[in-house]
Image (cartoon, rainbow, N blue to C red; front, side, top):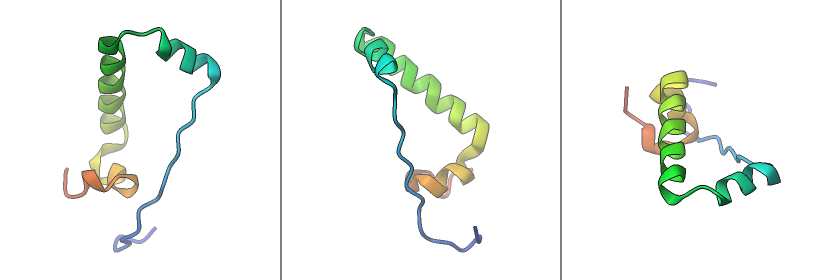
Length: 62
């Protein structure tokens, strides 16, 4: 991928039936905590620059 590329890559995440059942049984607070932990993990793992490739909200953050 070139540095000057302006297109964004679309990524679709899918969850198994079992994982969806697990989410269903979580409280709203537990779901929010799961989302926050996952977001933090992704940001630390790939960083904002790479994340901006799939999510324009992260453009310009570093």
